Length: 189
Image 1 (cartoon, rainbow, N blue to C red):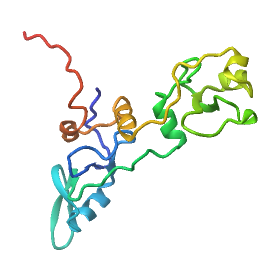
Image 2: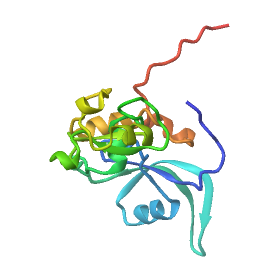
Image 3: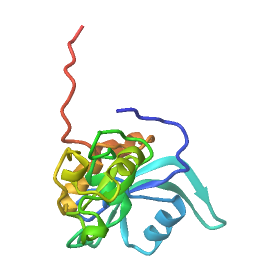
Image 4: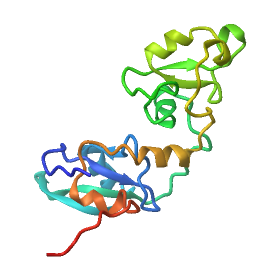
């Protein structure tokens, strides 16, 4: 895991009241202005701060780097069926060949054959595989799926998102992220 200590525009990691990120991918971040507003409205608790101080004529305050909501936000019952969530479910790779660039999506049962645009009938696909399959069924195209499309749960997408950390992680965020990942062996001396 790469941790950059450079500028991140002082975003604040936003945790739910249970101290878990609201989302991992995209990581739940607020710009510093939104974090300060939430502090003043008493909607969050500040868990960590940057050394950066902002000042007004009447006060000064360190910018929050990690905040936790005071009220628990219950996750949606089912994830939204969006292109992003579909790609996340499929690990950002074509479900026919495994390629991970220039993704689009494909209807397993083509619309021309009565297929619907649903979690269980749409998969991530690269343009080449999408063109090759066209409006044919899997059997007609002689192609195979790497995995059977299923409707994911929020928890499934949450866990998938943890495998795709953002480019920037501030050191104060690490105690709240990826704490259950396997540690690398380290020998002393």
